[in-house]
Structure formats: structure tokens, C-alpha cells
Image 1: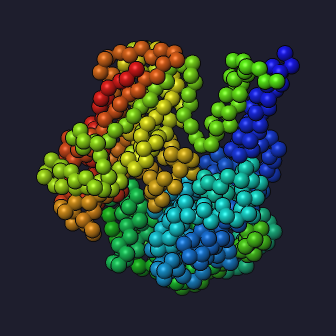
Image 2 (image 1 turned 60 degrees about the horizontal axis):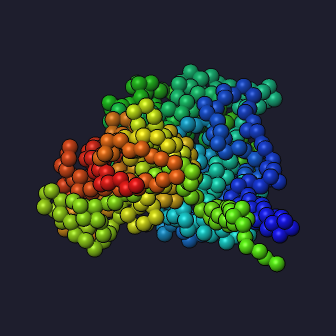
Image 3 (image 1 turned 45 degrees about the horizontal axis):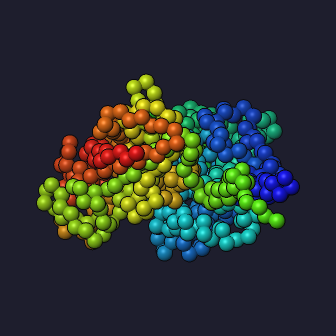
Length: 348
Length: 255
């Protein structure tokens, strides 16, 4: 009888050990606590159309892991190109003063790097809307041979060798398993948390500041002539439109048509946000326009007619010289230095 | 001291060991009390089992070719009877000609009489818009477009003297999960014996033959000399999928 009890206990012990081992390695252990965070929607702003964190609960640990990954050159083939190389915080996470960004082996990207903020309001990513989920966007530059030039397995191998990543993955996800899904979710927790809502314009809206005369006049003009596409408070309606730019003969970039295959989408690109526009020059999908004045000139007298030209631009948008100056004054009030200097988003 | 080990003790020890071993990687959901179904996919060209790289094949247009890569997604597997259906859980499988273990799908199912095995060739549209996923849906499997979010449902690469591309290669990355050029295909394969009773405690192996020769011709003619590069959604990909939707047949069911 005693021997029977002992052998049953041994068997039971084996089963319990196995269960604990399995729980520790694969499932989240019962002692796992990550600190939940809430994405703060600025007062008066519309709710994001979908919850980008629906399958990726936002936590402090996930955010910090994503932030470390964002600034890590090892996500690129030669270690030189982190996400932050092209998405520079002082340029509102665009590439400062570059039409195209630098990539692996002295190559260029083929589109102007968009700034990164307020991504929760965007349903589609990239200038042609080719990416349908925030978790997937990082794959595009990471694996592009002319950008970061890496492959997923190779990146994961590098991360797994790093004890600090093992710790941070465990803190964020419960175990030190490092796979593509966790890496991408962590990056999405960081980039999805970047909110820019503290420009002078925002302060004016909150009653904490006032426009000067030129800015006020510029704002009135803006509301009358630019608000169709660049809707407040996000300063974009996230639609894809052809704004009359002539086709770049070298790049032959037809924008959204590449994704949908629909000729009606020819030359349509995502309407960019105008927030922080004073630091995200040069402008347009290929960075061809270096100043806001040149942009306004384009809308005044540079529009090329075509079958897919946006209906709101068929007659162009005219401004007097004085109006141009005032609009530019207004656009400068969209700059959010709090965001550009926020240490929480800086290199850890 | 140690007397003969009783059956109960043996069972408990075995359970413990099996438990230990069972979580080393994602494994099939098998319960030995229920019937077990094992689907084995055998890729062939006109009946000859495919040998990657070395074997030379001839398509209906007398173009010769070798195959360096062949993979496709089999998902949403189910067995159907007259009034009953069993759906495999988490049914997402990447069949890869270069990896033997991926070519069979094993699961336990509800006992009953079934007349067909059914699956989706490709990844259903919901999972194409669900963000970063794991196991066979991991983007690291190199079956996912980063520039136009969505899975490559079927991929074949190889070489042919009739290809005008660099290195005489041809590449078919067949994808597109929505719109007029949707390449997703529902496949329904009736059992040769019409009905089979799947009984508790028994194993049933269903050998499914996939004839890659159908890729070239069935509803449309696909010639290497004309279309060696089909690597984005569109009419060419749709045409190839219309063809390969007919590549499967059940060779036999073993009980």
C-alpha cells in the first residue's frame, strides 16, 4: 500500500512539474503583471475609428520595449538603420530635410518618410495605404532591401542573444519568448502611443493662448480653402486623393493604384496631416516641394489636370501674396515642440 | 522494495512524461478516445512525386521547368456529412514541399459518418487584416506581403529555359484576398467511398494528391514564356488560382 502511494505521488509530482515548466515557458505565469495604460484621447477630438490595441493591450512594459526596439539599429542588416534613423523625433518623427531617406548600402527610399503621430486615427498605413494594421507596418521598412534590408528571423536571432531584451519581453508579455508577433506588437504599442496635441493651435483651442493677427487671418483662410482635405483637429481626413502633382518620370509612382489595381486610384496618395508641418519639409509623397510657399504655389497655379484629379482642386486654390504669408503663419502654429522634445518618446 | 508496477502507476507516469514532451512545440490536438484524421498532401506533377530542384517537368505547352519552391496554405479544414460537420480548431497549415513534417495535418474529431473533407486554399480574409500572428501565419514564414498587407496563398518558384527573366526563373506568388481578383478557393473533396464512418479510437489517413500540372492549364493557359513573374494581386494571379483550385483529389482513405 505504502509503495503504491509513493509511486502515485511520484507520478503526480512529475505531472505538476511538467505543468509548471510548461506554464513558465509558453503560457503567461500567474505572477505576470504588466502595468496597463490608456491611450489618452485629447479633449474634443473624435474617437479613433478602430481600437488599434484591441488585440494588443497597451502597457508600460510593452511601450518601453517598443521604444527600445524603435531606436535599435540591430533591426537593420548592418546595424546602422533603426526606425529612428528615418523617423527622427525632432522632425516629429519624419526625416528632417530629406526628400528620400537613406537606406542600407547607400540606397534611398522611394517615398518621403511620413511623420509618426496620431496613428490611432489612421486605418491604413503608408502613403498608398498598403498596410492594413499598425502591427504590420514595421515589416515594410524592416525587410525592404533599400531600407533596413533585414529579414525577420535574423532580427529575432539578434534580439534573443540580448539579456536585456529577454527581460523586457518577459516584463511585457509574461515570458521571455521572443517572436515576430511580440516584437511587432511592442513596436505598435510605442508608435501607437505617439500623440501630438499640444501645438499653439491646440492651446488656442483650449483657451490657453491666442493667435496673433496674421495667424488668425491665416486660420480663417485655412478653414475656407484647405479644410476639405486637411480637416481639424487631425488636419487630415485620411482619404487618398490626387492633388494634381505631375508624375515623376523616374519613379513612376502611381500611389494607391499600386495597391488596389484600380485605375480610378491612379496618382492618389494619403492626405498627410499638417500638424508639425514646419518641421516635416520637404513636402509631398516624394518630397519634391521644399517650402510651404512652394506648396501653396502648386495649389494656386501648378495643378495638372487628369481624370483622377480631386474634384475639389479642378480650379486650383488661389491666394494673394498676403494671404500666402498669413496661411504660412497659421501653419506654423501647428508645430508641437512639447511632442518633439518629450523625453518619454526619446532614445532610451 | 519495488514490486511490480501497477497499471495505474504506469498510466500516471506516462501521462506525466507525455505532458512534459507535449509542449516543446505546437502540436496536433489528438485525443486517443476519439477518431483521428490524418490528411497527407502529396505534391506531384502528373502523378510523379515532386523532387525539388533536380527533376525536370514539362507543362502542357512543352515548356520544361524545375521547381525550387512550393508552398501553399490549407486552412479552415472540416469534415462534412449529410447533417453534420466537424471543424478543426486553429486550422492554419502551411504545406511546404521542402519540409516533410508540414505535409500532414492530424487532428481528433467527433465520431460520425462523413462524406467529404473540405478546406480553404489560402488564408481567410479575416486573418489577412488581423495584424501580427504566429505559427504557420507568422510573417517570418515568408508568405506575407509587407507592402500590401496580405498572405501569399500559394507560392511556386523555379527555373525554365522558356523564362525571359533573370536566371531564367519564374515566380508565382499568388495572393489577393478581396475584390474581383480574390484568389481564395474553397475546396471540397468527396470520399471515393461516398461515406466513411469515423469511429472512436480509430485512425483514418486521407491521402490527397495535388497535381501541380494543373497550375498551367485548366480554365486558363499559363505560359512561362509569357507570364514568368506573377507576384502581386491581379488577373494573372486570379487565373492561376482558378487553375490550381482543381489540383486536388483524394487518392485513397486508409483505415
